[in-house]
Length: 274
Image 1 (spheres, helix red, strand yellow):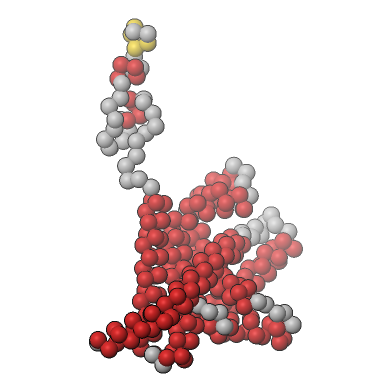
Image 2 (cartoon, rainbow, N blue to C red):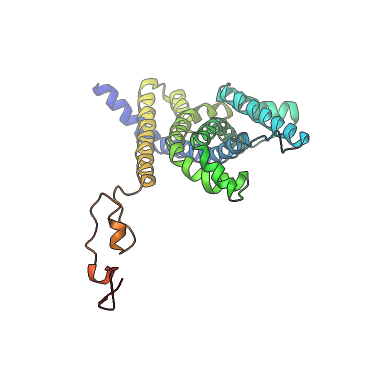
């Protein structure tokens, strides 16, 4: 154990800054990828829930909506059903060889993580939308809102609270899964680990250091996400924003002591009235 600790200290003394830069790259990829993945997921999830009215919509509109649903379903199944490392190789190397599209290393990394996360988030968002009471949608349409206004102002704000835990899960997964992007030479934390192992042959020591760094990042992310969830919950106790004494009789909670004299509905100007 003493020899192991001594070797770890030597590795950190020599490559500590490299590990930190690699961790920073990993966090940047996870943050940017999760953000744009959520944007993609919300867009795809909303598009997947566009209703088809067989009685009112013309045939061409029903056809386009169904075609859109099929395309989005293919996207979701393709990127959920294939490993990210295969997607990275195909997009970074295959796009250039087959289609002549050359992507930069960083552009490819952000793009890969974003579209992969978007596929998972699309199903999460769709489930969150479906979980909302259909009466909410019917009420929004009853006052003249279209599908997108209903999603933006009524459904998404309610679904977001249910989706937040999955957003956190995807972010934590991305912190770990970005390690596969070392196949396209992105110098993330895992790439630094491979470089240190190639230089010093300290497999166990370097792996232990990298595991601790990954664990620290995921634990910190979990803690911050739990704080976000609590913030969305709001306060546990609410006070009515009124001094009307009749309003307080409808709630079973402690209320501030109101000024009964000024709020007596049977008194006006110091005189009783009927």
